[in-house]
Amino acid sequence: MKKLLYLIAVAAIAASVMAVNNAAKARPTLTNIHADASSTSKPFMPIKRCMNMSSMEAPNEGDWYNYKIRKKDIKNVAEAGFDTIRMPVRVSHHTAPNAPYKISDTLLNRMDEVVNWGLEYDLQVIVDVHHYVELNENADLHEPRLEAIWDQLARHYAAAPSNLIFELINEPFGDMTVKRTDALNSRLLKRVRQDNPDRWVIIGSAEWGTLNGLIKSTPPNDPKIISTFHYYSPFKYTHQGAEWTPKPMPMGEKWGTQKDKDTITKEFKKAKRWADKQGNPLLLGEFGVIKNLSNYERARWTRHVRETAEANQMGWCYWDMMGGFKVWDRDEERWIPPVLYALIPNL
Ligand code: BGC
Image 1 (tube, helix red, strand yellow):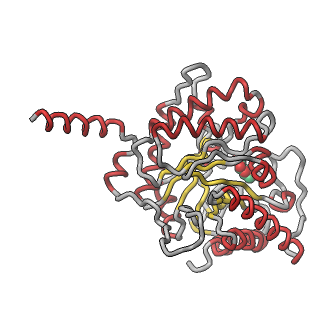
Image 2 (cartoon, helix red, strand yellow):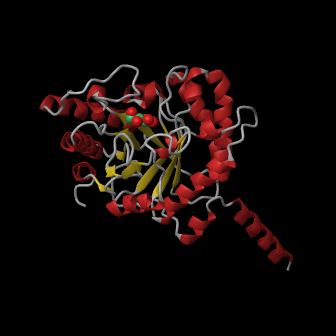
Image 3 (cartoon, helix red, strand yellow):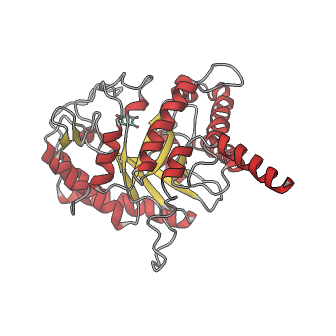
């Protein structure tokens, strides 16, 4: 009887800490959905085709591009053949300025909602701490706050299924040098591992998360990390007409000669060589072309980058579904065919 009471108590506690219990109950855990036991290509990479769902990168969801993620968006992503969504969230904007740096319950509830939708549609979900701008401006002040943010997220999602994935910092720059980012990544990972010993964790580097930053970095030694970089080169092609870049980005830049293609091929080979040396799988966590170009031009670059990533055994996440680099037309409520097919040709 005592044992039974004990088991009931343990079960009750476990249930109460399950932040995403509904989804966990509704679906079996999709651990390693892409595991291919017969494959000789190492190391194993759980993410193949992923879509960035960017609405929570804005200070408040909906502030930019005037949209919020809906359940049917997640369904559309799953039905198109993606296996993962990346959820960039500006958590720092919803976190108290002073210790213990509490994250707002409203934000956590909304994150849980989207996470649960993803899990419900059998997707892997990446929780990405995005746009912590102040960290790059004053790292001394903000590193302890980011540590507290990850302590809370790690506890909050400790009982979530294994297809929930963490991404510790997005595109550090400024104060966050490569060396400093390496050290912070190690500290954050150690803390996250206390509650999540076996969860996949995505780790990038400084210099805005570029390949240049990544290959200078030394990731922590851990069997469940994925290295990541972002690729938007040539920047003046992919960002032409962008309004948020420090320098204006004139329109009219062209891309697509053999030489242009070869440059990308060479860079991705370099990325692969670096990742193989580390022994980590590699994720191209963001790539895409701004909506200001024709969809055919956007598709041409996107296809080449996606194919080159796959040829080097990288998983990839397109930036993004419905924002400035969109592949979904919100007015028409449908995919933009050439760009979608550049990502998933065999739809
Ligand atoms: C930023 C977005 C931006 C995109 C392309 C992302 O890392 O968060 O705001 O649109 O890169 O520049």
